[in-house]
Amino acid sequence: METPNKFKILCIESTCDETAAAVITENREVLGSVVASQDDLHEQFNGVVPEIAARAHVQRIIPVIDQTLKNAELQLNDLDAIAVCNTPGLSGSLLVGVVAAKSLALACGLPLIAINHLHAHVYACQLESTEPVFPCVGMIVSGGHTHLYQYQNALTAQYLGGTIDDAAGEAFDKVASMLGLPYPGGPAVSQKAANGDPKAFDFPRSFIHDKNLDFSFSGLKTAVRYAIAGPGEVDFKTLEISEQKICDVSASFQQAVVDCLVKKAIAATKQTGLKTICVGGGVAANSSFREQLRQACDQNQLTLHIAPLKYCTDNAVMGAIAIERYKAGLFESLELDIQPGLIRH
Ligand code: KG4
Ligand code: ZN
Image 1: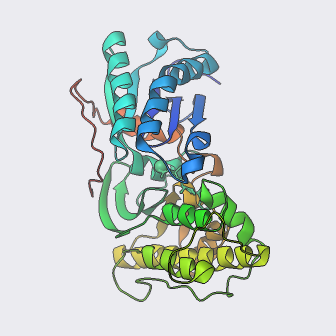
Image 2: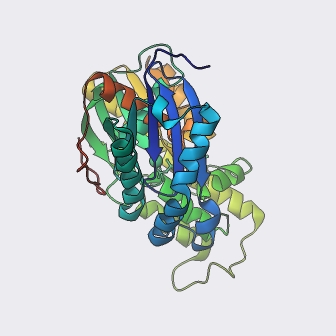
Image 3: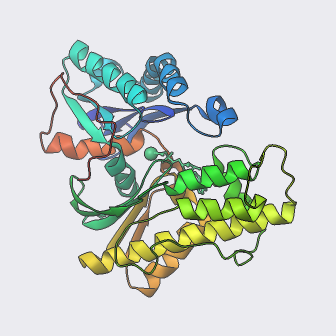
């Protein structure tokens, strides 16, 4: 429902392989939201191909924005600001969203707002919560990132730790590919895991006993490879793996990832003294992870906010963090650049 006197922001997301736009009001009402997934384009490569992603964004960005405005029953001149994710992400993908946003800001004479995609994933926890979720430990578990931050508020955060190699979602995608499961791998591995034994394989849990708040999933990925195919050259496309083994490897792998994520999330609260955890990103859609983190938070008297399922994977509604920047008067010039790499603050 539209609230006429509240400001409205068009948020644009194109950091990786989803082209998305949303119109959000000052009080976090979603007036329109469109996500055009590119999964079908990248599936055959078992991962995102940057060139293909960027070109698909070029084709889709304006139609996606157009459709979002139509769904919201709004015209461009009803908007109060244009917001766009400019970091982190794939260069070509980011460029498309940022150029679209700057063009609209110039043409409509509207302020431009920059969004950090990672902090937007955490802000997704605020979307359907009536309580303020900040300050908190924020955890981003996605295809590209596995990071912990200490948040004083939505806009102020310090980096606590993160993966030194693969991201959790990336590990799901690679394991799925070895098991002959479709891309993106997270949902497929999680489905198989439901019929498998999480104790069938004793996979490594890197850093789990260390004091740091870092993660490493590349050793786990190699251990999975050995469990499936042993050492030496192997053609995973022709490898025959029994259904039970696929399920058991999936369940044991998933449990190893979940153990690391849960342990470090809780450790981050102990290190910071914070009593609330907010989790966002594609892997936050994993039901085993959601369940086990919930249990661990209950045992440790912590408050847990996990992004609503529909806002775990990439979308533009989480760009609602732009509301906070609008209120703080944090606007960008038309020279706004992309920042593909992670800035750790
Ligand atoms: O947040 P996202 O859409 O994109 C990035 O910002 O990277 O996350 C995508 C990742 C993929 O690696 C996908 O396999 C994973 O999230 N994912 C899951 C599940 N659903 C998506 N991983 C585990 N379990 C799931 N149910
Ligand atoms: Zn993301």
